[in-house]
Image (tube, rainbow over all chains, first blue to last red; front, side, top):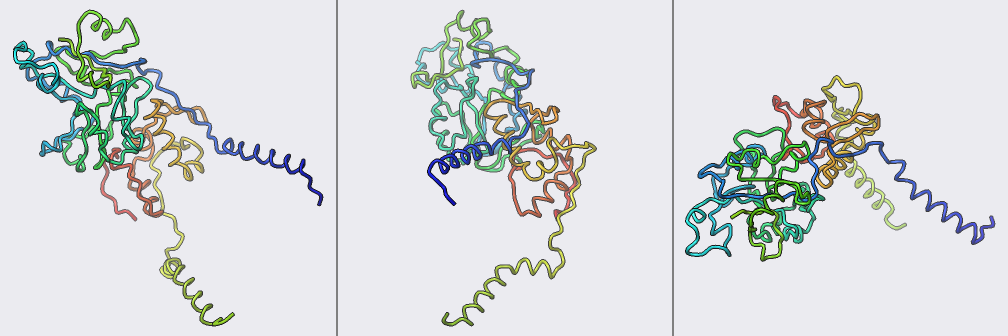
Length: 251
Length: 132
């Protein structure tokens, strides 16, 4: 059979076309889309007014722990926490001084993941298990987490907890609507991304009795967070590190 | 060929050893009997055609996982236009396959795969079945 160069090239071209069309055969008709009821925002953030935070009230943490199946472990070294409280000097180590206003000094400051603009945890993650989503929320894909804890070391806020043991036996009542975690993965606050997807505000904000926590979209000039920030002076935790934290504290 | 007898005998012994699990199952009479699954639903149709679900449910679940976590897309429109919440617990289990032990586990045990979905995802409470 005669087979010249032209025919050979034509055959190559046709074969390449055929191979590139292969995925079409496998393509499923299924389409994905966000829930139409979801809250829409471009840059989620939180403004916290510690002055409105009631003493010894831990409703935010209780709500968060219950909804997200956060275990209560006996060993404090193994503690898992998404939102918790710190003393002022621990939350803002650079801002503390001897003659600090007494009310502020003794106040418990609610702290959580700052959902940084420039998150160091995302930069160090070797498997891209942690990432920043399109709305600015720093999230975890637990399926990909290999438990190396680089992110725990990189986060300057202590916002990441590692599961040293199976958390399930230490969860009082498992919320069936939300998965638990497993031994060997890191977990953190998600700004309640699963609630935003249903059109609900984060659980801690909803549970807060003193309205000390405000959640909203920074890109929307009419949002409550923007109104608060333009009317008050706010500080952020360790912003000098260049992480661009997006949880603001009114002082 | 030198040592033809030894080589051929050796090869034969090797092949028999290699395929011994198959002969063993044949001898016990339990070869090739796929497990009886209890689908556990009144729905007439799977999310996608049944053949696709049997062969590629793991691919579909991976697609769901990435769509939900990475892109925040939580609604799945199937080929027939029906919409589903992309949730392993709420859609796959609670809506259809109410018995994980008699559906998921039976086939996974037969195929000797140990997916770790349930380390984190919640399965509805059910009586402990003997996995066969």
